[in-house]
Image (cartoon, rainbow, N blue to C red; front, side, top):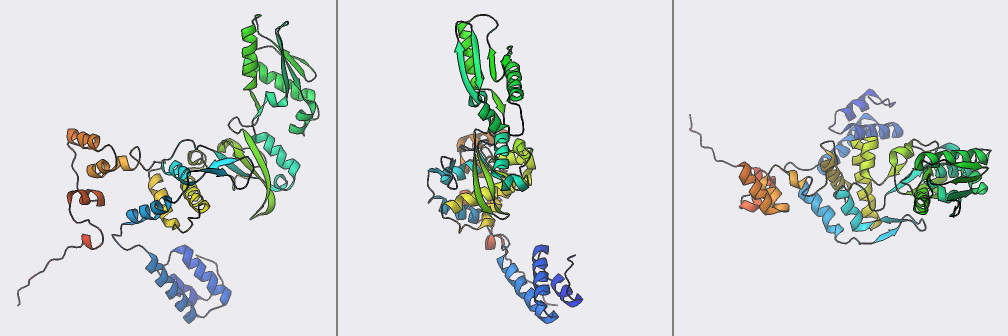
Length: 396
């Protein structure tokens, strides 16, 4: 029950409507704000209830067909290009029709995975603190920390770590030698070699003199990620106006949602990811459903197609997630798993579906739209589901 300071009569009038709890709370808030009488509250509640009932879907309305048309028709106007993301220089993300196809196909990995990372407290207010989070997220390879050279005569790989770079990326560590020691340990663990350290200079080589092994060590060294998240290749930092005020926001190329949320300074309540499967694994199926709705709506809005009713997108997201997993809309997902043989056959690989159904002795109850259209029967929707019979009764 809502704790609004309104009279019992007003509360009783509003509670007596068929409105859902959210709308009842809004009407109660309005009643409190305007100090309405019981009669005025009845008029407001009646008007809201009438509009609510009028917007509800009629029984046996073909909502699936309407939603498909609502999304599909504007979809024909979408572009096939990849654009710069939100004005961030040199950062591209798939938009338009390719992005919409990615979402409804429930692709495991988007073409351009990104995360939008919001920061907590001082991390979002101070650029230096924000950069600390950047270095914790962005994959830092050994190659970025200094120069690599080879001495073929001595069969040695030499790594000259740059002290300024080390100090920049580890501002809270006083000694660069300490960081160099950690780099040496990482190299030893990754390559299985013995590393000798002289300040910020590291040297190592193959166990047996071999020019080929020496070159292989150098190539393997280039791929070692010393700090940050391996899947995140780049992070862009921007100062933006948000609901929380002006703050620093991070945009990443590559995504590792679960790992990013654990990093100090990251606001896990606002950070998002465009990979719906990562959202599902990290936050659950309801969060994945919200991500599908948000991503599809954003994709359409970016193309100027914001007149698509969000309820149609919600229906698509509901269908894709209703069994607790994310299913694609296609023959490998929802369309290919329908109970009706004819509905499955009408979508793709018609012969295969009909042959399999015949082999297994399947029957079709002709309950849906597609199968009734195929066999030429009236569709059981709207007035098509009403049977009228004339009954004759004998008079007493």
